[in-house]
Image (cartoon, rainbow, N blue to C red; front, side, top):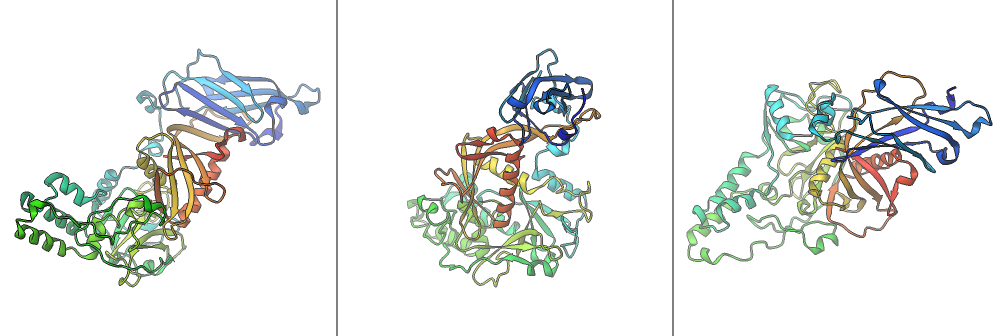
Length: 492
């Protein structure tokens, strides 16, 4: 059969599979073709030795001649059931092919076939801490231009707790100041002191690298993407715990008014013991303002902040690389700090920094981190495996809505690319874990339901909107819309 040069590198293939399902589905489409009308004598066969799918048909443009079209689609590394027939059909805007699998794609035996384990490996903070510690000492660089960001080598690394420390202490020792001699309060003070930003210490969260401003070259702090608006510090209650988001949080942009009195009542058991109460109050007074903000959760992971972690008293100032102006991270600022970090610390996002001077080197501990993967992992963690979880993403500075995401399936796998008509070497491509979502920007649709509000910087929001829009093009138009929203995906 003669090959048609017009078809080369024109048709797109997208493989999809679901966890726990022994089926592999292929979407084969071209934006200009109508397979139902144009693909006559359609046939699909598997070439097992080359891990390819051969798709052939006679095109209507042949005008009675016997020449036709043949496309070769690479088959990803899966365990195919060779005895099951290949099911296919031509639809208005795509060709659909279904293959049977011996085992689902997430089965442990199938995982052994994966050669690029780094690509599918989860983002694990414990691994980062261990590897960085074993390296002995590192400099941090801008991932885009490789300029060095740190003044000196960083030797000490520790994990930044992401839980409400006061709440955890109370769960263990009780909320009463009489409990174990106020040990809960003492433990909180110890924690805040031990995890303070200090020169030479690097604190790691799931998405950020927290360094003291003294460890960064001077020009890093001078290159700001945007300065947050002024704030009215008001009164911060000593020893206050993180307040919960109430129904007003949606009306005022999701911010938590942490200036309200959160300790209006005193347990009856504490009335008789003035000494214990006084001791607890003195412990609270030992906490500086930045420590109180930390305990209240307002200095937690800013890469994707929940509404309960956003305070009107803390403004986040974004940082850019002094060499190439690409984003690096952010730091918290407030009244009286003169646009400097409240706690003396700067949060660098792992997707923008590198531990190697050369981009992409295997020695870069953060090479697996991308904006897409970090956002997706945080998104799934918010959803906690709930189906149809609605997330409204807002601008961290203006609090205005950016886009909405509805999680459809957090356990999907996909592979996409462009077809070829050439007889190429056998496929070694692999499926990647993805999260299927519905996506809509807030300019073209009305937000009706929200399960969670999260806040990110405007620049990151715009980049994610572009990623989600492009990912929706990996499906034929008939499969790209649902309930007036785009069907898209994000890589885990």
